[in-house]
Image (cartoon, rainbow, N blue to C red; front, side, top):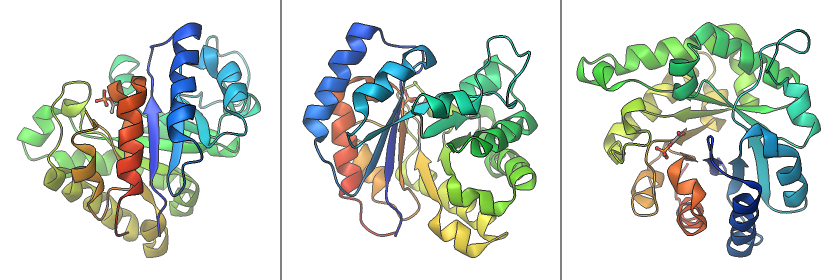
Length: 255
Ligand code: PEP
């Protein structure tokens, strides 16, 4: 039985005041939510105070990126150990915005994944195809390349301590959501690919969907066999919408 995870990726949004208001509303609405793991991933500069304000609550904290190095002369970067020290449990690696803007290759993402786990963090590994890839029938090829780079570098058993987020790039922040059938198809493909290395790891692996998941489309996506939660961008900044998605995940059947 896989416990669903709903993680909010706040991206480069927020301020001290806005964060306080959002978190206070989330704590009130979610209370002692059971049966769903919940996390928020704010901008790094706010992590220590947010981790402190959420300590003892049911909401975990994650970072949006980490270095592939443990320490040293890497100006502007943050080591996994630093993120863990200030209270992070999760870290997103390989988000498409970073693959694009920072030119993060799959090999680089794999190194970040390994470094994050070495620091005791649970990586949320993002994979997903561009619109042109889907239109030219290359979705599985692209996702395999991104996934295999990490499987090869970290080994399949590392996925006992990791989460995958399938995020079709064309659906991120666009309002275009993959249909439940499109999403389920790729989620099943990912699980089968991991199962090719180790069926037990694959059966226990949480695979989240990300890409314009909202209150009104979450239930349809989360009802499917291989969709174990969501990585939520825009809707995670709205306490009511995020809570509705968490509740939909709590009603998820199967797995
Ligand atoms: C994301 O960036 O991880 C994401 C899923 O964004 P949105 O929900 O806004 O599409």
